[in-house]
Image (cartoon, rainbow, N blue to C red; front, side, top):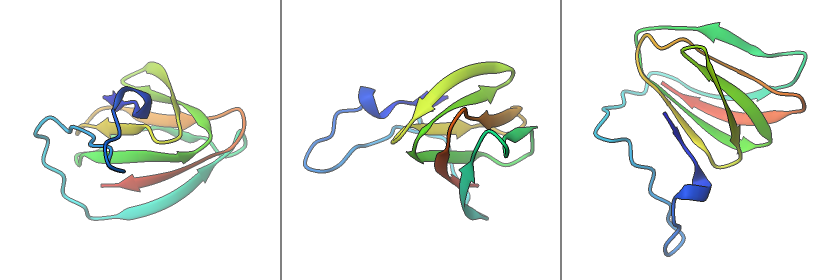
Length: 97
């Protein structure tokens, strides 16, 4: 699931991303930079993850379906969903999972 910042109204400096009741357990927090030379290849695992795009544009693959993402978008990855990220330029993002 991709929650696009452009679809979420910011009110009083706050932009609420609705996770639709999905519980999130954070075992790791990672900042990443991905470039054309360092794509984040498709993989899957048992824990849920959140990817928050800080800067740039990329293509996220979720279960083989490619979707564009850009700064302030949130990617919600459920357990055992194959996922990866690639870009034609440079994207900076955070992974919580």
